Amino acid sequence: MIVLHGTTCASPAATVDLEHDRVSRTAGRKVQCPLVALWGANGKIAEWYDAISIWRAYCSVDVTGAAIPCGHYLAEEAPEAVLAVPRVLRLIPAGEPLLA
Figure 1: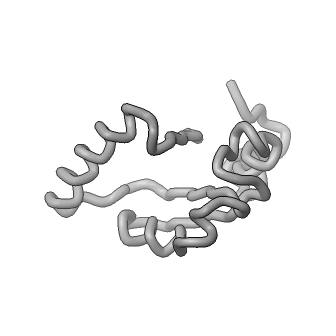
Figure 2 (figure 1 turned 30 degrees about the horizontal axis):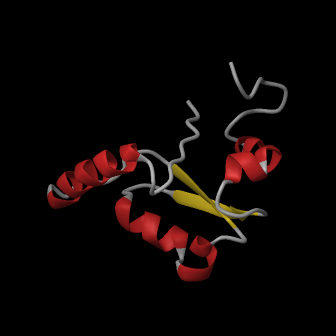
Figure 3 (figure 1 turned 30 degrees about the vertical axis):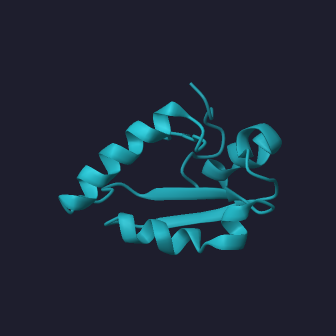
């Protein structure tokens, strides 16, 4: 299963996620599935952080990822690049539909 998820800090859902994240971290829980982190190459994530290293601290399995050539809003600014990621990483075989 491929899940594309994104949120912004202004989203009310982000607050709920932070509360759950704090509980999980305190309990020592980590992400248990392979994770692909994407961020905008022209945004602040690329400038301020080493995104892969940060996600590796939260995961107990493999973390991969890349900067997408855009700003903060990946799906809106570079939808083709975002949708290409599962195929490039061979998460979806060639010829199979990306979206069911």
